[in-house]
Image (cartoon, rainbow, N blue to C red; front, side, top):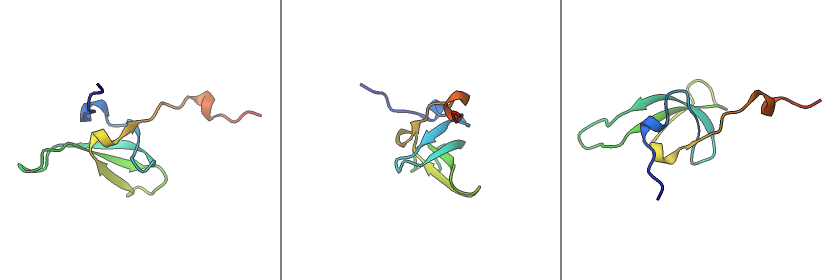
Length: 77
């Protein structure tokens, strides 16, 4: 059985994929906002947007992206 992911599984700076398929970077952890709100959330800055293109989601909705290596991003000549 797969365990549910938690905020600690996504440290600030982690590259993630949202449910809509957009890629971004975790920039902030947010705990429960009130007594009636028990959910942890992560704020993600999306790549293709401006500096204000942010989304806040629960950790179980995110997928970690593999680290890109310099060789994978280099174009072959």
